[in-house]
Amino acid sequence: MYDIIIIGAGPAGLTSAIFARRADKKVLVLEALTYGGQIINTPDIDNYPAAPHISGYDFATNLYNQALELGTEIKFEKVIDIEVTESIKKVITSENQYECHSIILATGADNRKLGIPMEDELLGKGISYCATCDGAFYKDKLVAVQGGGNVALEDAIYLSNLASKVYLIHRRNQFRADETLVKKVKSIGNITLVLDSNVIALNGNDYLEGIDVKDKDGNVTRIDVSALFVAIGRIPENQNFAKLVNLNEFGYVISDETCHTNIDGIFVAGDNRTKKLRQLVTATSDGAVAATEAIKYINNKK
Ligand code: NAP
Image (cartoon, rainbow, N blue to C red; front, side):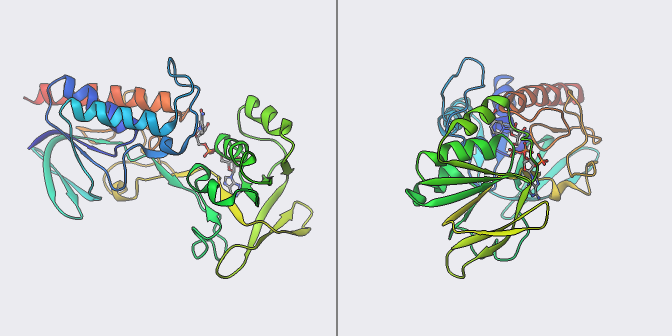
């Protein structure tokens, strides 16, 4: 029997584990894929206080090791269901079942897809959702990025150092990304902006050979690129909890700065909850708050 089961080993979940272990609670972290969450793909974080220039990979690895050193159990198993009774909570994975007093949902969010034909078939063959993972395959080639947020602009900057040319395609003529990134993108010679436009078709059978881009007037242009990096935001990973906790219309767990959900003893931390600002610093902050609330809940119960 665990005191707290944390679902997700990203910055929010691992920070929860650190706080819970320091309160001497028995903690299990369950992670479906690998530790680190979204941040693992960021080359240079640069806005986390007192840690300038750290890479996402180093940040996540430090966090993971810190949680392990404090005695957190971490298992790589996909959670498929949660059962709640008055006295106990049961977390069911594809391999096992675990019992606990309290749960923290820290599952983060997954890549949003364009939803156009061949997107799945060409994954890894020209379609990618991670420039830092796959950019090196396209050295000196023509590539494109779709999106207008921080991730898309960071990807375009990163790729401009590898590819011969980067087309940055965005559906509006204003970027959502921070102004510093917008200025930087505009200053880089081998980034071409394609605004008010969307990728509507992917050309190529075995590998991506080009994309069709449609502008707001309906004109379609073919651009011959070897890769398209899709960076159009993320979808919260709450599908398995939809019957259990209240979600909003976009699928985020409804909560506030206390990280409580509508179920007693179940808390939520990080990008999968309703909040104004989804950043690394707010994810780790949530991790600390959710763990503290879970500790209070367990102590009161005992
Ligand atoms: P985001 O900020 O939500 O931006 C998504 C972008 O994709 C928007 O420009 C959006 O266009 C566009 N988009 C959404 N759906 C689309 C569709 N179906 N077709 C075409 N375009 C579509 O997402 P993000 O860039 O992944 O960033 C996620 C969060 O992480 C943000 O809060 C971001 O600030 C944060 N982040 C921070 C850092 C950092 O601090 N260093 C780095 C990376 C990410 P519209 O603008 O028209 O809606």
